[in-house]
Length: 273
Length: 262
Image (cartoon, rainbow over the protein chains, first blue to last red):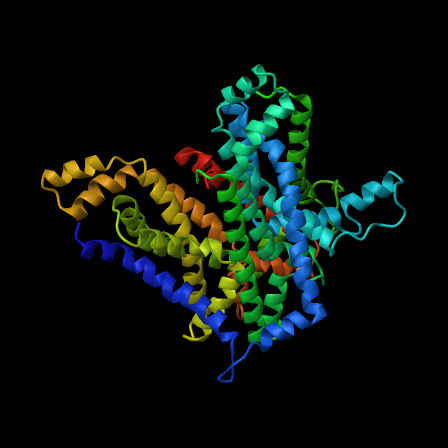
């Protein structure tokens, strides 16, 4: 096919994304280095020297790290279990994992408000059981954010891992066992390394997802800000677009650094690419 | 080989209780007859379902969301199908760069995209909020359309297209009469997946509100921040029913294995 035809097919989409996404993002980043016509990095200096801002950055990273870690811990065994099921059962459990993923994040965060609130299900159950006297303050804390985000992203890592694990030949495990490896050793030496690509992709999705999620921290985090809610606050409530752009740039940089690092780890662990 | 370990089965069961339990709980609380959200509910009533229709902004923003998601979907299809076709059918220089551009809306944080669009699209071009919503939602739907249509095209045997071409059919006629009908279910699945993605979007829409204009999820968010009654639980149940219907559709059209591929 002639090049002209090819351009006609691709150009509309590329132009659309260039005008409405790539250029706005580039301008947002560029704007952080200019103030009233002259070059400046004052926005970053302000951000990185203010303990309040640093605390927000730290909370965001901490919540994202814990979320990713717990998601791996819970998701890995579950994904392994699902990947070994018969086609029919696997289909049912996959559907049950996909369902929350497709459900509105507002609905899912709201459900945790009902559970974690002062008079919520968790507190009233614990009080009824006599385990606590005063209700626990969980809602509107980083813990609530973590719970909400683990709930939000766990399905993502499960289905990603199932996709990788179901392609591992079960005979490999049998072979390892018949050669004298224990179940656990066989799992550690066969299943674990072969699942690595899925684990890394899944972890990137969860980490970046929790780093940038807005709804869950907005509803469950209370005054405890994270980068995304802080960006919104600066842009809309405080009307400080310069600081909002600085936060936006920091979020982009952290996202791409994480993706880059994880990909590096991935190629190191899997030299075949 | 099926995993027979009972401990692992129990662990999986508990994780699914964690995943689905909260959604079951809000379903119960939606039938609360009183004014306080509680579990278990104090009886059975549909008053909060009725209340949905009494809040004008719910109906209005629901309409806005449906309109934005459908119209944005159409734009994304018009831009995305030709691109997906070109990317799957031909090999050319710069293909991986183009792939990266088309996937970029998934990689860039949504909240950053929303802010950048507010600043450099909505305000710069002085557009009405509706236009901003349409543009923003088209951008977020595009990668999903391209991905699903491309995966559908990867199962299509382009030799059939070659046959039609060699028999004298024009390129465009061949596309509409041969290629398109063969990827029809992929396109419908793409529409459903993109629709859900757009309909549930918060990150972009949260920056694109104005007097009396907002999308449904943003209205829900605002309502939850100011009221804590079972109306949202009732709405959640309706949204979950819609989600289930969409899931059945996607499952029928291309199987849920789509979600396991990254």
